[in-house]
Length: 187
Image 1 (cartoon, rainbow, N blue to C red):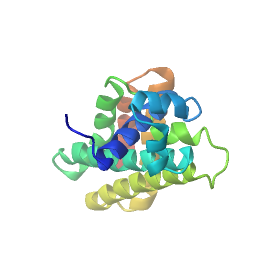
Image 2 (image 1 turned 45 degrees about the vertical axis):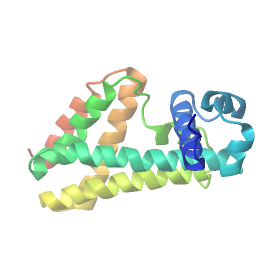
Image 3 (image 1 turned 45 degrees about the horizontal axis):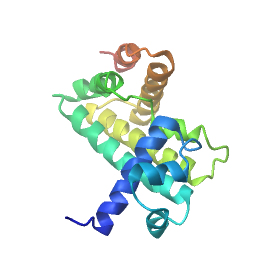
Image 4 (image 1 turned 180 degrees about the vertical axis):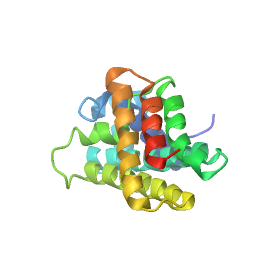
């Protein structure tokens, strides 16, 4: 029988935490349920994370890295800068149509925290900043006149599409946002 390494145990805890908070939210993800679902002891959880907040932050940071890698990779498959800017939305549509789509984990968890300085809010802010930086990079590559301004507008379209897709169940929100992006880009 193969023993699970400490690194694998930590990964299991993070995987389960991420899935549970994405599906149910932070408040609904109790430590008892998390321990039971992960199949680890409470002691194991606290060996790696001193508090639930620390665990949630670590799970969100991990999600940020994975999500940004996925998004950049998928958008990067489009040929040409204009196509990549438009792919920001077609990639979202594929995500909206995927099983288990529950909106943006960072918007969702930010809504559970009232304090702008809360570590969860800070992770969400960092995620949105990385997304904005990526969109700005694409705007610069495309040679738009005011890349920072356009990127900020496109970020609003991205997050708006995600929110409408979740709340309204309308996957065409990505198409609508892409149509608006075409106008902003003069395409």
